[in-house]
Image: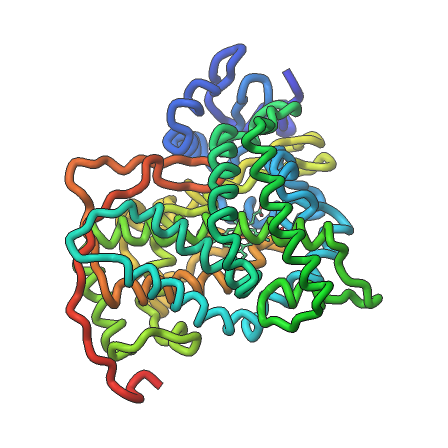
Length: 463
Ligand code: HEM
């Protein structure tokens, strides 16, 4: 067995003993979320376990999480599952490391500044209105499938503007193939041995090729025509570092592919879980509607309304606490390090779980309860949360570059939908969790749509 972390007396951190050969692989395979949370509650803030013969250290306390993500991020590279994603994302931000990542982050980050992303508010609301126009009261729909299509539409339009319109179907199909294949690897891939089985079926390769053709086609056309556009691609094309160098076509392709994948399923999950929770809490749903009515007066929202919908924002935050779209962050230590009295060898695999920490009763009383009030300004003032008790977007230098975009999108989409519809769950259809690369409903969420009476917009009232 490989060397694990030891304290001064030579003891390993506490953890499940597991099977001699398999370690905790069976428990992890059966229900990883339940098992990992049980480990955290039973053994404490640093847990040692094995997946076959690969040692894993589970960190669930905000202080230790902060150490890895913020205080010493240079010593921790991304875990193996990210390396597997390289077959699709190449050297995009999510999968890149070291000096090259730093250079790319400096080029991409300004694109996501508030003043640059506000312009996508209209794209977001328009895409939602288009979807709602096809909905009818009384219908049953898989809300997760709807949210996936909607957030893909938003990210595609934000990246490419109207250039993507002829390719929308091709992009959707190819991305669905890729996401399906990654499900095969599941979210525990970061625990797997070095030689990770990469998805390499013909279908997978074809999907990557198809997306490459579309993305490169748009990039080449832009460079050729020098057409000025107001989309993310334009900003990425113009982005320059201190030496004045810009991105190559290949780097642009990798960043665009990364934004496509990182930027749509996560937000779709946040919205699907919000609707799932709202359907079970009609009182919260009613208060949401009241806020929307009072602030928007029947008008569709704009970028300026985002900050005027605090309760909508609290709902999104609480949904992401209970069902974090990115439910785990994996890292591997480059060099040995010391933490909380233990010496950890180089190569230590670290699992940080939003899922477990964000349901820890020390930080969230009655942690299983859906209570958006936890995120009200008054509650946070009275009971400040430790940094990294809640971290749906990660933290430190590798924090989600699209966090502001995602929050604006989730608030605008939820408000636009809730203004016109409420939803109820189809009875006797159990919703199951799938902790894959993201945390999503295994077989979707079937919901019945109920149309609200349309209010005539009050002129000038929301301005
Ligand atoms: C609710 C929605 C979202 C959630 C919960 C989420 C969560 C995360 C998390 C936890 C990370 C850090 C991973 C790590 O440290 O290993 C991350 C990174 C990233 N996210 Fe998001 N994300 C969301 C939406 C978006 C959107 C809309 C975009 C872009 C359009 C985006 C682009 C990225 C990129 C490029 C990275 C890599 C950043 C880097 O390493 O420099 N994400 N995201």
